[in-house]
Structure formats: structure tokens, C-alpha cells
Length: 562
Image (cartoon, rainbow, N blue to C red; front, top):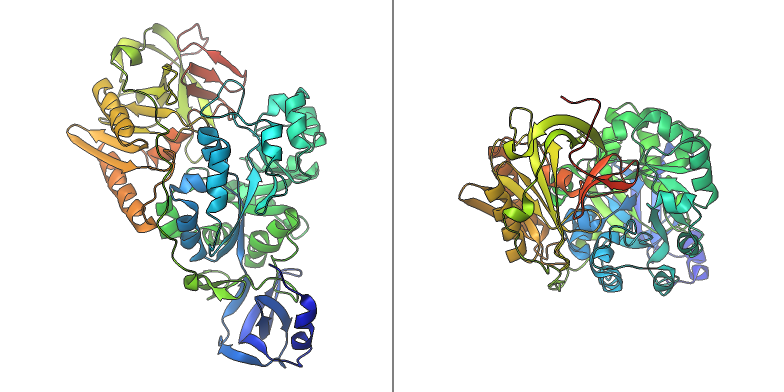
């Protein structure tokens, strides 16, 4: 925002009228976590003051409604919403969000620099300020190359560009700890650097922080988060579609450390955002878990702004952007209206027709032989963990020819390289609960190959085929029924309006419900290939041990089997 603050001084002193004055409001003071009953004056999109003596060209009597700063998401992947940036911004703005800190590494792994440029273009005229962190791990590890590979030199071209504020989550923990020169060159690109260090502790955690990583959003236990806080990290407490960490972590938040804690939604599908909310949902969940409403609001506003050096927002104070939302009360936290720079979010123009990002699926449907899994005896099995994206490394004794094993909930899981490399990996997963049918998607973090699981090979192949025919998407197959949500933008996002994406997701949910499976099966499926998360993963090479950080066979000698 280009503005001479000197031009606002007369209005701040009461010598000229403000553009608008909100009267009789309960105004949240993010600095002291208290409320002040007063009036708030805005001119040229900037808060010029709080007090009873201001007059405005327009005046609104809020009749005791509460004013809070616009909400900030400290870490999100917009692609996971399945919406393109302009449509995503319209949806989350309706829930009080005015700023998101996004990492575009999903589309960057598919399309490299072109993907980053696509996401940056989506910032224009959005009702939310979309700020990006440069994707630091494209690919996530040297073994997991998808559609692109970005080194420090490629990323440097974006440093300093409008809308770029730092370096995104550094997931290559082994590379950091080894002092890999290529990693260190990336860390030198910015003084703001997000981390990604699930379960990292002790001296290795010390070394990771020493290398320059400042935050973490992967904590799943209070002890883990408290150790990282004590060592100086910012903690983003995450609540996504499957990653639900507020209940476990929120008891650690105190008035003394709230400045180091923020909220992150990380990966949320559009239906959850539409029905339950965004950062407003995080606030309500935290309050329901026992956190004082004022501390929750502080986390969602000033704490996030200060972490990223955004001194122009995060609080309702003179000189800050008039990013704010009107809520009913701090406990129920229902957003009545959102304003960005003093302008109602609903008044921002609807996005023009969104350009798709096609032709990123370059593979053919595999044959039954190509997804065959051979073996008999002790087997490594990926175990889903409810409410988390980490997995368990389970051991079962079985015959691959007998899959699926519905009684023990053991299903085949398949990954097909979508970039023309003709690689297909197969493994076994426990926890989906499908009694029949199959699902497939072109979303599989972070390389985003096609991933599928199901109760029968024929249906797995049919689901994969549906995704390929759609040039990216999410598909559910149950007998003759085939339901598809096309993702025409890099196989990750849809150019459909949010309401239509939500309707398609509802159809997929109904279809998977008939299969007898768990809730949110597509989100769980999408993380099974993410090799930077413990413990056991599946890639287009086969099974991967995320603790030992190496490929492993499905069948092999194990001490314990079920």
C-alpha cells in the first residue's frame, strides 16, 4: 500500500473527518489481550485512531459488537483447498481471514517456476492478502523428483518480488543436519525461514535451529512443542482436514508464550472451509479446548503478524491497515463481516474466468500385472494414524495374493509416476476400512504422482484410469459407479467455483461412505507418499522408511507380526 502517512495526521488529530467511524464497538487490544469499548476511525484504508471524538463521512453504530484484527493463517498450502487462489481468497475472507502465508510447493513440485508464477498472479485484487514463502524443497528429497527441481539460483529470481516474504518449510532435515551446501544456499536467500521438523529433538533439533530454521508446524505432542519453544522456535498449531493438533497442543499456550504461537490450517479441503471455517474455526476449537478467547485471538492476529515482521497489521492500532472483522462475541466467534484495508471483503470483484493449468498428467493406465504385489510371510504395512499425517510402521504376516484382507483391514496401495517415467510402486496399507471400491487422486504430497487404494485391483485400475482421463482429479469407483472431481489446474486445483467443488466433494464423500471407509479418505491418501514424514510411506519406487530414510521391501523378516 503506497500512502503518505503525513496526509493522515490531520484526521488522526480530529481536524478532518475520517472516511468511516465504527461507533460503540468492543475493540480488541491485541497487545494486552483486553477489550476497550470505544469508536474506531479509518481513513484511506488505515486505522487513524481509537476514541470517542472522531467524526466520519460515514458512521456505523455497531451496538456493542466486537471488532478484532483480520485473521492470519501462518502456514497454508492453497492447493490443498482444491481451489485456485482467487476463489480460495473469497471463501476464507468470508470467515474473517485477511492474510495468509502460503507455501506454493505443491504446484512448484508439478510445474516449477511456472507454478509459482501462476500462484503469484492469483494475488491480484483478492479480498485476502496472499503472501508467499518460496518453496525450499522442490523436490521434497533428492529421491522424490516430480515435475520440477528448483535450486537456490532458481529461487533467487523471486527473492524481493512483491508477495514473497521468506523461505518456506525446510523439509529436508537430513540435508540440513549434514550441512549440504545446496541446502545452505537456500537458507541464505531470506532471513525469514520456516521449518518442518516432525519429532526432531535433542542435539539434532539444536543443530536444525542453529542452521537458521525458525518455526515448526509439525508438532503432535505437547512435549515436542514445548521443547521447540524453549529452543526459540515459533510454533504454528495446526488444524487441517486430517492434521488435528489443537487439542493436544493448546494446553501449552500461556500469556507468557502466546507471542510465539500462531494457527496454521496447512491442508484443508474446500468443504471443511465452507462449512466449518478457517482460522475462525481454529479459534473456536482452541476455546472449546480451554484456551482463553483473548489468547486464541492473539494467536490468530498479532502473534502471526509479528512472526513474519508484518508490522502493518495484526492489531487495531493507529497506522495499521484496517484489516478487521466484526464478530458477535469472542467465545462463539461468528464472523459477521470482514474488511481488508477498510473495504468489505464482499465488495471485492469476483475473479475473472480462471485460466487452467492443463497437461501435467503424462502417463497411461497401468495393467493388472504392473500393480501386482508378490510375497508371502512377514510384511511391512503402512498404518494410518487417525487425526494425523504421520503413519505407523506395522508388521503383519500375510500372502499378497490374498489381498484384500478385509478382516484385518489390509488393502493394496499403488503409486503411478505421472511424469512419463513409467514407474509404479505398490504396498499395503491399514486403516482405510474399505469393504469394496477404490479411490485415486493426482494429489500425493509432494511429487503429486497418482495414488490409489482399494479393495479390488479392477476398481483400483478403474479409479486410476478416471484420474488420467480427467487430466488430474479425485475419483471414487464402486462397482459401476464412478464419481470424479476434475482438477484441471496442474492436477491439484479446480477452476470451478467453490460451491461446485464442495458439491463434487460431497458426491465423493457419499460414494466413499458406501464403501464403508474412514472419514476424509482422500486427504489421508494424499499424504501416504510424503517421505519427509515418519514412519512408513509409499512412492512410485515402492515402500519407503521415513525414519531410516531409505527404500525398503514390503516383504522381509520382522520380529513381530500380527
